[in-house]
Image (cartoon, rainbow, N blue to C red):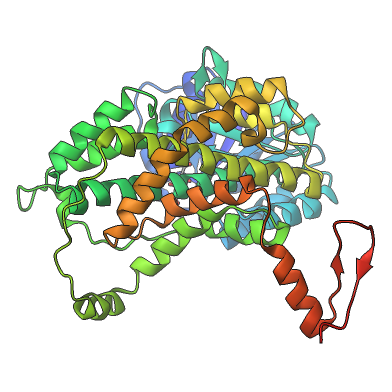
Amino acid sequence: MTTYSVGMVGLGTMGRNLMLNIADHNHCIIGYDKDTAKVDEVNQIPDYPGISATTDIKQFVGSLEKPARIILLVPAGKIVDYVIADLKPLLTKGDIIIDGGNSYFKDTDRRFNELKEQGIHFMGMGVSGGEKGARFGPSIMPSGDSEAYKCIKPVLDDAAAKFNDLPCSRYMGHASAGHYVKMVHNGIEYGMMQLIAESYDILHRGMQYSNSEIADIFENWSNGQLAGFLIESAVQVLRKKDDVTGGDLIDMVKDVARQKGTGKWTSQDALDLQVPVPTIDLAVVARDLSGFVAERQVLHSCENQTTLPKLSQISTDELADAVYTAFILTYNQGLHLIKIASDTYNYEVPLIDVIHNWKAGCIIRTALLVHFEQVNAQNPQSTMLITDEAICSLVKQKLPTLRKVVIAALEHNFGSSAFASALTYFNMFTADKSPMNIIQGLRDLFGAHTFERIDKTGTFHVDWD
Ligand code: 6PG
């Protein structure tokens, strides 16, 4: 019987593409899926002698070299538990299950602990880059027992995207660290996409550029400081024609954004850990709000000013600078959250390797990450990127432009919540004094919650009457 060095559970597009990618690097790989059609599809791929697929889970596990290395690419949630339950009786001590889906990190911790009791390694592994990434090189964010990671590392390094020949698949830390980092990656992705959406809105409704003109503007941006996957992708989205009407497809797409939950999880955990990530929060809020279509229609018809005055006081170069600055502040929020989460959950995440893994293959890759990597290398203990002198002065230098864009957008009744949140986030961090003293005074007045003084240590309570 042929033996295989890797197993793949879930032969949807992502699973099949990652299988082919792994097979391209001379690893024999067998796939398993309950769906006969998906299994047949893999078995019918010509010119790949090193791969095969089956609907028989016993045959699947039985044909794997020991320790078994099994990657799951199935939808996050209960299905992961069902697959684990089916695999568990067939596995032995030392075998490794690697969950490559967008699983919730607390589920990953639970599965990690449950399987540990049986001596089976469970690894949470973020995979970014969509279908193309899976096929030709995703960014991979693995975590779990370092012993298990070492065992699968050669396969991951081969399959991953490369930046200057270095694989973007570095180890992210203990337990669910990989899924945590991927969750925050997606939170940053939400923030960046919202900033792109707000820019499109300003350019389209505000400055009255056509879709193809905006595509040209974005293309110009992507050839400069804003080089990166999402801006490049926005060019493609804006240029796509609709087969049905012959017009621009973007004009036929309903203005309601859906979500699978990773951005919301980022905000939820940031609130639990008390780390401010306002641009990510507002990106989630903007998607939620877009879903209230009936209410939006009612409120739109209440608004007197149906045609907005042309927004002409900012240039497209200024808008590009505002996006650049807000991107920095969004990355900062996400990396700050990872740092605090790493300390809280004892992940020991090497931030420099997170930044490295995001340089290629993933959705949030931009030229900025190379700069962040240098900054982190100089000061690995720093909690926030923007406390670095060079990054802080870069943001400060561009801040008047971000402010100008926010003011112009708000004056013209645009939402622009992501731009505004990035600006206020920096304003609040850089203010010499926050107004929280009055909050403390009020809390002590009505609830005797006590306050601290600036001239003495300890906590105090007074009768405010
Ligand atoms: C990636 C993407 C991927 C997926 C998101 C979309 O890194 O390849 O982030 O994971 O596109 O889950 O999330 P929403 O459906 O919530 O926008």
